[in-house]
Amino acid sequence: MRAASIGSLLLLGIVPGTARAQFVHPKPEDNRPEPGVYVEDPFIVKYRKRFFAVFKGDFATFNKAYGEIEAMVQKNPKDARALVWLGNGQTVKAGTMKMMGQGADAEKLLATSRATLDRAVALRPDDPNIYMMRAATLYVQGQYWKTDELPRVVWERLRDDCEKFIRYMGPKRMPRVSTHVRGEAYGELGIAYKNLGDKAKARRAFETLQKVCPGTAYSERAKKEIAFLGA
Image 1 (tube, rainbow, N blue to C red):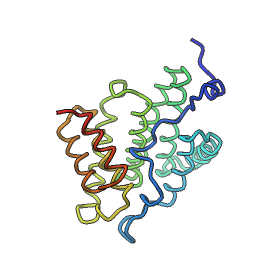
Image 2 (cartoon, rainbow, N blue to C red; image 1 turned 90 degrees about the vertical axis):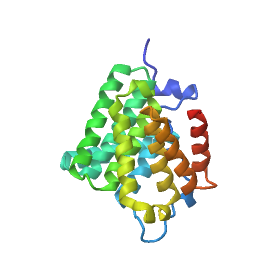
Image 3 (spheres, rainbow, N blue to C red; image 1 turned 180 degrees about the vertical axis):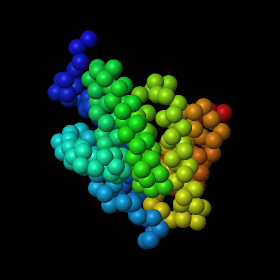
């Protein structure tokens, strides 16, 4: 079967790259933490906006940002912040290739992406901006590929990164960070446990999410995930 072009997919109403980028797409008010509790690295925030434009079909913004990141890594291969975004971009490109019928090449690039993400975290293992960006990217991999199509380590890393962040924040600070940060940490943790086959811990993560983000879209998605888990 001949691989589809991006143009032909667009004509069919299929936008390559438009997987669900996050557990819940945040509203502006979801990104407002209490002052001084936890501030994300402005570099990470800047490139998240530009990279995640691809999930709305804006390839021009994504490609420009990706080119900038590639140049940064070429200049400094030990730039953990640039590396983690390079790994994210490689995942998006791999997912797009998969949708275009380039399965074998997509699998290779996806494996490269995971190695890139791991290099970034190895350089700054205790920086939550880095390991939570890896977590977010691993979550995205699960949007392009089915659970059993990915190695178990994807879900183990996602679980470990989310749990590490929750420990880092602690029970006093976690309720005071933004709704989005709380929602993504517990939501992606639940997804990791679900895909590892541990329904009890997945349920616990989703129930905690309902408690820390009541009356939000995060709570609603958690409710649906609990229903999917069954009895």
